[in-house]
Image (cartoon, rainbow, N blue to C red; front, side, top):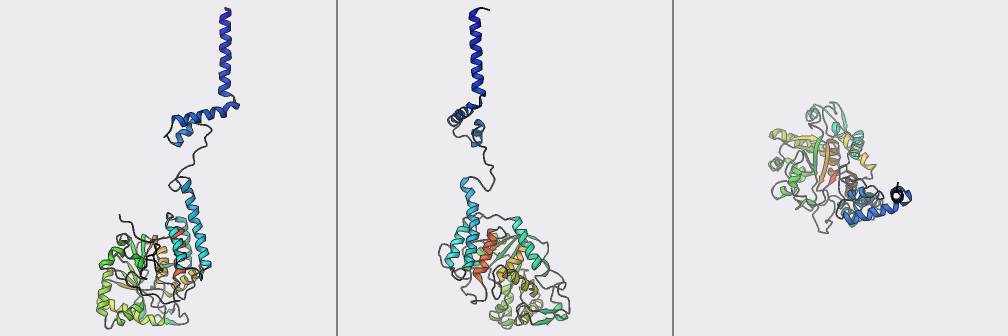
Length: 398
């Protein structure tokens, strides 16, 4: 081989060795990575983070994404929302010093948090209610859960009893009258003034089962805000006494008013106080004699006593639970998804706009009889845990 050829071969070998060192030597990897990163930034502006990562071994792997956490900012939201539960518990601890404004500030913050039903939380809470109270079998009096000859103890006047003889026994359904349990979507409609101009009527009427409280008006201008569908409505005996004069003078008016509820069940607390029994039986007889579509049911006093104990362990120590909390508790056991409308024990909105106590009047409840703020605080906690959903204002039109 000629000398020039040998020299060329030697130079080529040295260049090859140098190239291999540049490509494979670990000490130079960071420099190469920085070069590749620089290239990727200059050459791939506007491309996805995942594509840039493929170009640079020094770039960390991307964080997995899901429907809840989309970026660093949204990662912080659940923690902030979680802290609201501690704020609410702190509010409970200073209950006597807390004001409407304290609640409204927390509600304002809660509204900023996305709501999602939490199946595990829901099932756990429903199991606790069922083990305590069992609404599916016991929330209304039936011939199955109250045999003839039973000495029924009253809910509040528990020392008093009423013997269940044939004339009373035949008023009870044979078993619980609710079919196709559990219902999928249930609406519990309170009567709060927050419902005015809410436009929630159409949404409420799409529910599979609608609960209402204390014979509220659902016709005329109210329908667009509160809906008209009704499957069960509670009846406070005082309404029968005061508004319908014990069904003596205003029986026809009563029958006309309840006709707006279609074939709904009318639920009365016949066995809460002795004074409720006669007027509740009078409602039953009136509907039976008039051959109307509505049917009368009676709250089971044992169920209501156990439910009161359940909520007492949560801090609600009122003389008696409100109809709204009773029915919301029932709904959790009977339904898969529960949404509350018109639950608002405050005199103004979060925007500081004054509102009436009810959407149809401004009559306030008896002081000391219920613990509305504490009850509402419990509902807020259930909302934040994804067990049920509170509607705080206007409904979205679809």
